Amino acid sequence: MSILERLTTIFITDFKVALSYRFSFISQFFITFIQLTIFFYISKFIGIEFIKIQNGTNINYFTYVVVGLCFIDILMYLSTFASREILKHKASGVFEEIISLPNNDIIILIGMNLYPIFICIIKLLMHFIFASILLNDFLFTDYDLVLYSIISTLMIISFFSISLLTMSYTISFLRVGPIPMIFVFISIFGGGAFFNISNAPQLLETLGNLSIFKHGVEASRILAAGAQDYAYVYLLMYKMIFLSIIYFFVSLFFIYVSLNNAKKNGSLLRF
Amino acid sequence: MLILKGVSKSIIRKGLLGKNRKSVKILNDINFQIENSDSIALLGENGSGKTTLLKIISGITLSNSGEIIKQEAIKCSIVGANENSFFQRISVLDNLRFFYAESPKDFQNKVSWALSKMGIEEKMHQIYSTLSSGEKKKIAIARALMRKTDILLLDEVTSFLDLKSKYELINMLKELLESKELKSIVFVTHNLDEAEALSNRVIMLKNGCLRLDAKSDEIDFSADLLEKYQ
Image 1 (cartoon, rainbow over the protein chains, first blue to last red):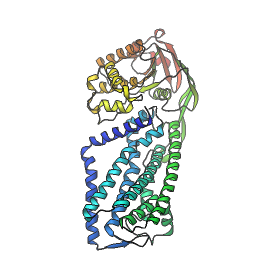
Image 2 (image 1 turned 90 degrees about the vertical axis):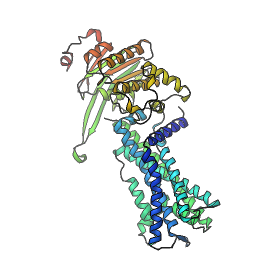
Image 3 (image 1 turned 180 degrees about the horizontal axis):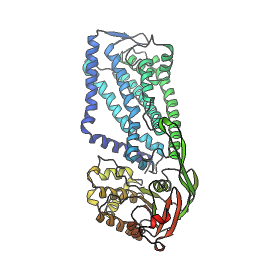
């Protein structure tokens, strides 16, 4: 079975398993709508009309929060999904069968992220559509929409790398571990997911600069504000591409090391 | 055909809060070979290293020392007593498709062949969790057959099966060996009748060491067999 055929099979199987839990499959999208509606009315209630973003442009507070909320949502989902699957499969004995397949183990572990990536793309679309309905206006239009799609893709690639890092931790220590929480913490307090971080401590700001999240939300907010500051957006995108490549190779290295150790120890076997 | 040379395996056991780490030897200097048409009964007490040995032969875990020499390209598949090593909420067909290793083009023929060999072709579209224990074991063997397995490693597959299903399974395995669809079988069992019915060789382990390697017709499969060598 070729790599592409193996990846397709893993995706279809994960999709069918998820679809068999009908209620939770549908409700995960319904929750997105409820979340956004609550934030919409809270932002109206607290009465903050506009908030200043990094390049000095004013942006509607709800739009500001929606961008952060959307990326935090997919970061939490994507970075933990495959690790939870590994633990579930280890307990049932499915993982033993998976690693005895003739394809490269790393390809199979990458394949386990395809279904959550697909769900994240749907969640991104949902956020965009629901926010546009609540605002009665499109969040992004024309060229900005194209740039936003590229930014979202880079964000998903980086979250996928975080997922691989989490998987390597899970393979080594048999628990999901702190990696997703560390990245969520850095994204919220150092990356400005929900509030302006101009007064944040220096350490958090430095950590925020090392996370792709900060650059992604900043670029998305500039586009959503319609500021047309494309030079700054491109600069942020270059930083994202650079960090994505580093994240990806670091995570590949860790997953390779943890898989080799686990095979030696037999720690991934059911008993 | 497949030679185990000085295979040893030890694992680190941790105490409470990860303290008192100590190395525990699971297998110690195991030497034997699996020939074509061998049907080996692997006997031994609980914790003697039988399952670990099968997992090392199948390649899903590695030994600490020693080597496994394959004189030709041989595929080994392990089928365990565990019935949960499938996706519970999807059909048998979808499960077999997931674990299938060859080109998807001949999947349909292969799946029909393997399930008909096991006599459960009509269960193809049934959700896996709705099958009986015996049917689940047969699906597990069908999965191994679909991988073009040469050496089938069976880890207590007949446990919890009723007598009829147990002998059906033993007969099917004999047929597979006779028709050369399988080159060899190594099976773990605690049932001496079963060992006598299916094996042509017996290997016994005690505390990770090889205690007996003999032809079945040289052995008296009486109740004191285990006591004699333990």
